[in-house]
Length: 464
Image (cartoon, rainbow, N blue to C red; front, side):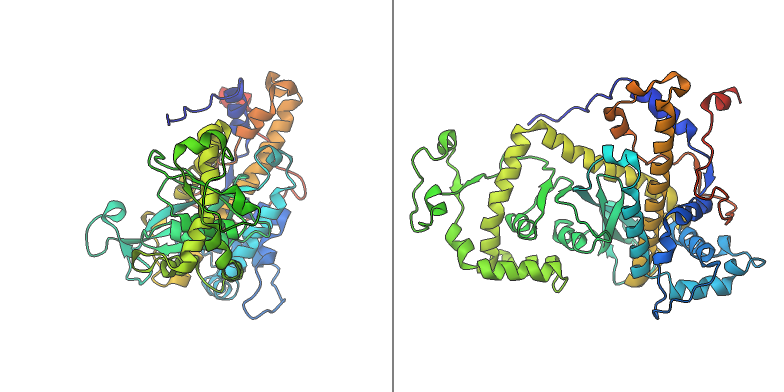
């Protein structure tokens, strides 16, 4: 198959994009977090580890400072202000131990995912039914059992070890959750675990991931759990397609011959047959496996390794493989014949890659390395980064929507009819040039109340 060329930009997109980018207000990262909290109440979802409901009036400032310190990976020193009660070292350490844990971070992030649906422009980006899972690599310079060596990503040496943050991003550009993986173990073995640990209440239906070799068992596990697995394949020239005997669908699973003309031109391809008896024999166990995965009683990583022990499939593994071949064949046929399906996969993966670029911009401290040795501490670090990225995405969504609506009124000579749905769909909230992540961190609550900051005038900026 030939490589798809990039889809052309809609007519007038660049003018609208540049105008929207120029209209976004300049803001410091801490103030962005506090304004997002004021409008969504995200920090209110962080509960004390003891279950206590007592909260200080300035707790939001302390939690915003912790989010800055951990998501920017700069530590507490830059955000400590001894003259401010909410930002003393003692208060920051106490609140971090009590409130800033994985469960609280996940709850705050889920709040942003829910609130983003109320912003009008997000309906043009997608329905939240498609998500991509991709890994972001981090060097771990400290001794840790949750890091592994990899010369390809971290070089050669005693300290050249790292971990992978496998994160899930929806077509609305919001992070739905993540999973920290030691080293660079095969991502396909952990993707389903990441899906079952999402922060958001509503899960996507289609899961895309980058090119690679994925076994039939992986397709089967995704299908039994109710997901359409849609990876981007590097090469499909040697990929096997499968067929189902129509006679078996009528209940006669003892017949082993191909029904005459049942599949038309596909009869000439020499396809291999899916074994329905193998699926029927193990169906009850397959359903139990799905329940165990959905309730996090077992990890998909361990399950796949168990079913493929010594390089041979067990009986249950063989049943999942045949079940997965049905959905793998359907996926490959769509890739071959439906160009929009291929473009959907590529576009969603591009969103994940662009979000990683923003993550690198935010996570700049300590050379972008994870400095916690324990798994829980590393998860809190990347969890804070995920929360910060979602806050930026939500804030950008809000102001991009306001900027587009202003343009639709005729501002800058761009009439409403020219801001088409195709243009709106491309204005993704991953811009960051207007956000200051460095230097002095002011933690002042916004004075905008329930309103918005004033949008900038691009013409005035050009004059300056």
